[in-house]
Image (tube, rainbow over all chains, first blue to last red; front, side, top):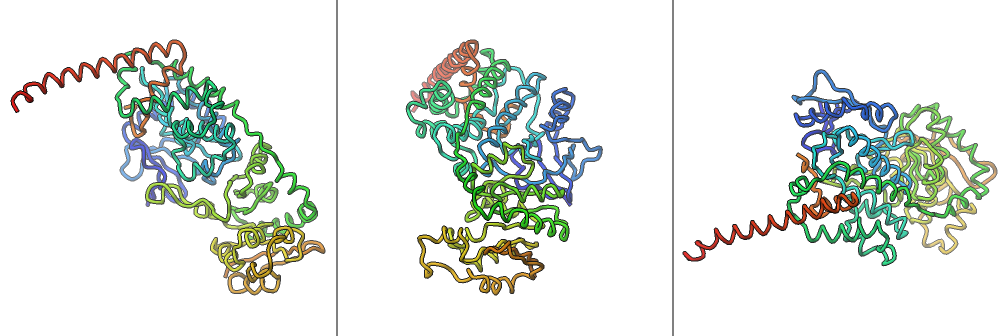
Length: 451
Length: 57
């Protein structure tokens, strides 16, 4: 029984289906011709061998009445650009440009340019949409240029040049900001930079003047060539490489400096290792992962570890140090929802994560005291994952809780904050497998399994 | 074939020629001129075919 990938349907030549755990790409005649053109290139062999392209194998007997089908390895965890850090999106942009330049050198083009075609596997960007490659026809422009600017270049410019995080924009509008949007956002000084004059101001103006006009034949007749695309790609690569984000690592440094972090770290890691040995999970979801230390512990045990945190500077530093865990920026008070076509094209974070073990260290007191989520609702949400959960409970006399409640009075806080109240709330939802106090402090670990 | 499922944006397409450098600017100019001439020829053809209809009404 084949199950359609809800996010793969826009290209009629190629779409992905699942056959149990197998990932298959069904091709029509055009898709098959494009595959044959790609598969014979040295570029395809090289980029697959060095891990930049997802491997693909043509099946001898395609399923479901398809003309042809490719089989891909399964991507361990699918994340979306609005969950990536600045450096992740920039590396994805550079991969997109590199692949296009190398493919064009052998007569192949990439017909779109969206970060949704790139996934991070073992800490590296990998291009997963083999159906995007097709034979380059002489005189054709780069069809994906506008999409590249909207979904890669402008979001990076937003952060680098205007100090605005791109994730909320991409989550709100997955097509990304238009050139006209960027013209309104960038200051005059930034708009006068040569790259902005071209990619932002001139593109916005020409889009306005030529809206809906057929220009393809005229360009081909006038002598457009792949050399012009390559020149553009070279300049874009230089531009993207030069986009930086000088974020401060205040959160990171502050976190490292908390006494309880270094004091409790190894005890919490041991508690996790015991749970890993007991439950043998395939996927661990580390909520409020901060510097992803515990995700790394889970990853080292051979599981897929998904580190979720709302702190972009910290996760960006984790990415840049070469971590191989899956990184997701998401505010757990408002995690990524299901969205896109029919509200199903891009599933929500919980559905994609589908964990066998949830780690909630150093998290729930932030949800309870900062986001004002009642403890009962926090526990119901964690039970909803339907798998074992490790929770760090922080009693009201903890130094961090004192900091979080410095400007609150007791009447403004929900029931369930004391350890006794908390355990009362746990009881109807979970069996307590193990519990321990961290040192002599006010923090406790619970290993819970939902009833 | 190239205009598959993605709307490439006409303005963005002709801009690419300009972004390609000096040789591209000439290509963009030629394409732009060809489009203008095509539009003018189209307009004249429309006017000619429209004329009898107008006189008949």
